[in-house]
Length: 551
Image (cartoon, rainbow, N blue to C red; front, side, top):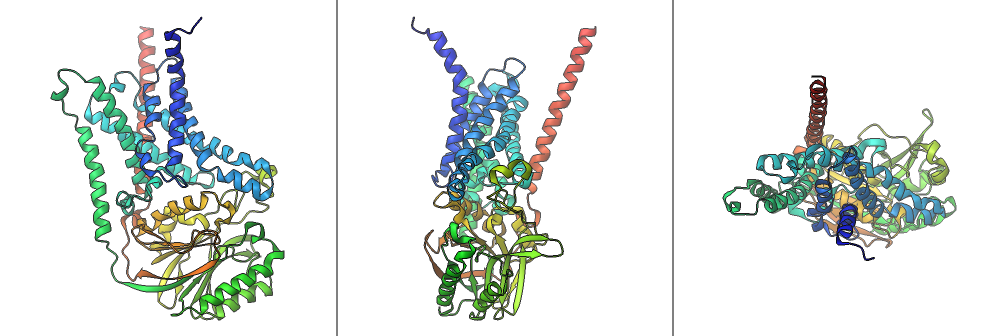
């Protein structure tokens, strides 16, 4: 017998929420490199929000089902956007068990999305009357609370278990310069809040309009729509003004040469390839020294040589001899071993005055599964060959000094330029320019290097400082204080680029540089207060029910 229409409708009603969750996960993926469809982020959460709000609230497991919808969306998004973790590392180490790495990360990170859908679906909107969204003030409060909860879980993701805040939802707008200038006030959390707020308001407003269609439709004022449009317009206007009239003050030119050696990752840490790598660095640095006017700062990438500059006399004299041939300073990445503490560090080294003056920064924020292995007893069998030993974290935000011109720079190693809270500490210490040395050769031709740059753009805006990036395989470029990216070399192309960067002499401290993630802290306080209020209400109702039963 053919299936009845009622049975078909019942099947669709059961399946559509899960399809919506998958759709949101896929849409969010398209917002980021390499797809770069950032406009989608304004509606990407709409399917998941609809599934969360409008699935039937029946039974005692309603909250669990809503959390499961978020988990599915997070699983799809994090697996697809971080798939390069699996494919590139599995091929590099010829260990196909590493293909499970991205799904494993997604299985953990999916709980953040699960928390959010549970919060908006089971805490903020608990009954059918609330899902009609009849009152403007309540609707704004619902959208604001939902956006605050999203900002809260992104803050936790950046810090829990070492943290990996890559690709927060606000980062999807990294090319939309007018809309991201508010980062100097709020950092990326403020942009994430706006994006999620708009997604929630889109669903709330459409649902309210549908419910109020009728003779009195035009007599009611829905000023939450006006408020939302005004908020978007205000953010856009602020951004346009910041772009048209940047407050940078007096500046000095800094002549920079960035060396992109394009060393294959299979050779990068191979002692047998040391002679070849030395020869290539020597050739490129020699050509850089011949440029006129002479460079004031020459950059090599992270882990420029296979072994530490302190490994032996050969390595030490090689880098010092390279510094001696330069009129300016040489900044590069290496490693250091502290014999007293028996600890290894990933460092940035600045050699100036023909190698006589040496300054060092020990990297503070380490990359999980790259520079240390979380939960080594559990993951050692799977990833031990990838991370045979752990680096130790540095403890000081060391700002490095150039003598000519007299400027101070923040040495950001690897993915430290994706961390707003860390970067602003260098700016508070007097850094006038941000310099990132990195080795994204680990990730081959995947979108990882492009995602890295997309996240890094916001450090320049948050602090109103130029950012210079030098990568082994790219992306070697500069980002001005407004977030405009100027490419210096094509990725996976060996060479060097000689450029002039304007560095502010007395740059102001932005609101974000002074106060950091204040917006996230407010969002977490609001989220915690709402959760506490919901818990108190629940216990009160239980007490009232118990009293009525007793009577």
